[in-house]
Length: 97
Image 1: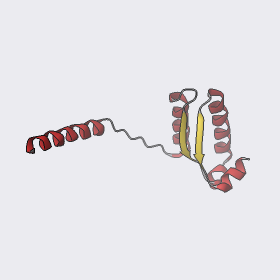
Image 2: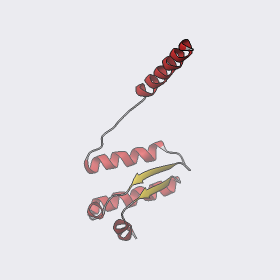
Image 3: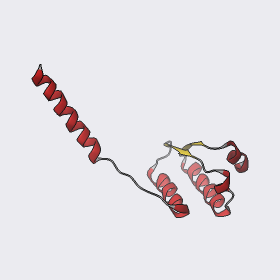
Image 4: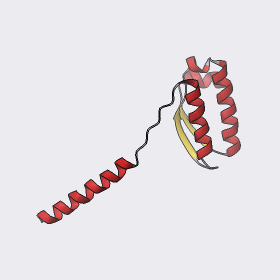
């Protein structure tokens, strides 16, 4: 029984190591970071795929260059038939119409 437990533990440790080796993190900063992130989303997803996101707040949406970027992004996203599920503040949704 002790040998069985050791085998299970060894298997779990190996499994954990495999998951740790495959982890990746990226940091996106500022408006250029947003553009990079969202362009990567479109480049990596296929028609019918979906992505989940938190939407920007009304303060950020007040910036005209951000409004233009996201309107163009969502036009390209819709053209590619990528589905977006976005949680956003009700105030921002009202601004977007």
